[in-house]
Image 1 (cartoon, rainbow, N blue to C red):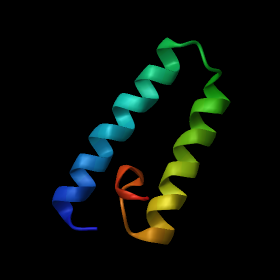
Image 2 (cartoon, rainbow, N blue to C red):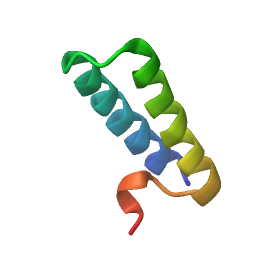
Image 3 (cartoon, rainbow, N blue to C red):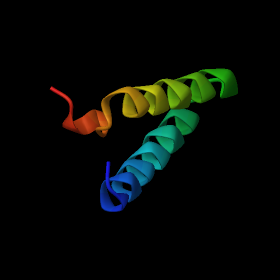
Image 4 (tube, one colour):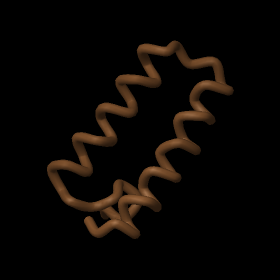
Length: 52
């Protein structure tokens, strides 16, 4: 993933995490979701929205 894709992923991730917080999810749930997204990116080298 190049720097432009990483910046896009980071922005999408922050937006999704903010949405989870606003919906009242627990802190640990939000942290687990964030970790899971990072693991997907680490394993695939692609942003989750680019996976099919």
